[in-house]
Length: 190
Image (tube, rainbow, N blue to C red; front, side):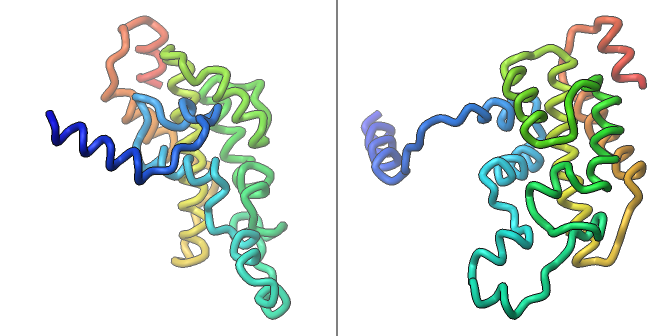
């Protein structure tokens, strides 16, 4: 018992306690896929190494470096704001996924998506769980697709990426325990 108390004291003296953020339950929820949730946490903290972040490291680098365009659409600057979901590629993926997740009213912009997630963060209904899984998986796979194009010169069309997201979410849902209502069965079989 004394060891637990001293471990707790050491842990609390080492860590920096920050105020709780309103999006924590939307990112870290019991049904989440941990690697997707971690990626979402990085996105929420604006920590992904997009070109806009890299250019902040050194003002002199900005002058000497060609500005990197989005590897998904080749039409705009590589940034968090653009990637989620102003990019025409990620927008196509999102529009397909929001229809599949019955989130038709959620606009393809990060603030609208986050408002939807935060409002439903504590809900355990299958529709809201699917919505959270879809958003997090979409962000995860869009980031992965961006990196595959930059580092591996490998590209997939938006419909193939959307199918991968659907399969991932469906696979996760099969592992969860839900009351077998008609909606749950219909959702899992689609």
